[in-house]
Amino acid sequence: MTDWRFDEKIVTIERHIQDQQSHFPGASGQLTGLLQDIALAGKMIASRTTRAGLADIIGATGDTNVQGETVQKLDIYAHRTLFRLNDHTGRLCAMGSEEEEHLIPIPQEFEIGDYVLLFDPLDGSSNISYNVSVGTIFTIFRRVTPSGPGTLEDALQPMRRIVAAGYIVYGSSTMMVYSAGNGVDGFTLDPSVGEFLLSHPNIKLPETPRYWSSNVSYYPKWSKGVKAYSDWLMSGADDSYNMSMRYIGSMIADIHRLLLSGGIFFYPPEVGKDEGKLRLLYEVAPMGFLVRQAGGYVSTGIEPVWDIEPTGLHQRISVFMGNRDLVEKAEAMIAEIDGAAADAS
Image (cartoon, rainbow, N blue to C red; front, side, top):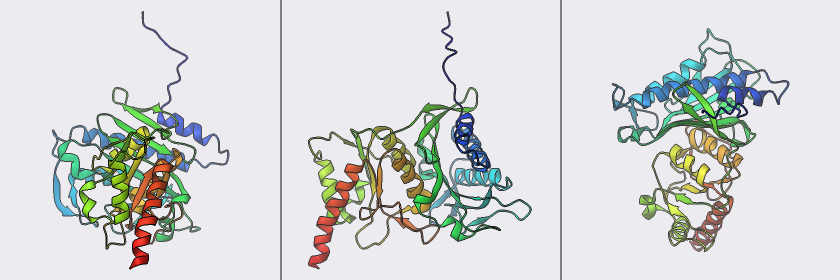
């Protein structure tokens, strides 16, 4: 006989977002609708990623984006899907995409709203041809200008002002993970019903970390302090840790594993370069916001990312994020070794 468990609560992402809104009696519903439309965009993009090898949507377009990276066909589809689902709703004053050099205005025929949406439409898209997990990352700010079309001032806000952020990872299953400042929750797409269902409530970084993640092929280009930290991890760290090294090469997949397993992800700058590789607004801030909401800590290796004021839409920085003790250990070693080297010079 089938064990019907009528007492089990089925929570769709729409229901969860609506429940979250109920805690704020004065809420306008704009943020609720925006998050629901992002979830819909995720379903549409997932429908293409799961059949990319069968459809004429795999491969490069022959163009390069503002980052100097080869544009994939799925990049374009994901970008257009997010834009078209959000350009007319009256919830946004502007959008920004990792694929576009400038802020994207809302078309003149549509109403202007109170929020700014920044997104990386398909993080890790260079891995599409190899069936490696890719995903969409998004950040939402409340505008700071009083009215009219959105400006750069509305978009160039520090991580501490994020209203909501999250990602949708397209892998063996499709998951949407997001936070509106009250913890982190994960939802898995059930393709049989076409709904994101709550599968990972209240995600917290495990106290005992399992993995550390970095592209160690850049080891020769790192500073002495970062090398020493990497050596410390490779040697087994302290006796209290028993971590393995894992690196996928799609940031979204590496951070997804980090949230569920604990550990540290880092992408430091190369010696002689002032900036790192990852984009502050499109990658570090939203993913760092989630890690922080899950109990972790986010740093450049020198200072917390939380209060950094962005200077440009595509600003790049270095990053160390994960369990606080591991990130603080990196900060201490970098300060001691690289600081001493700087003083000696």
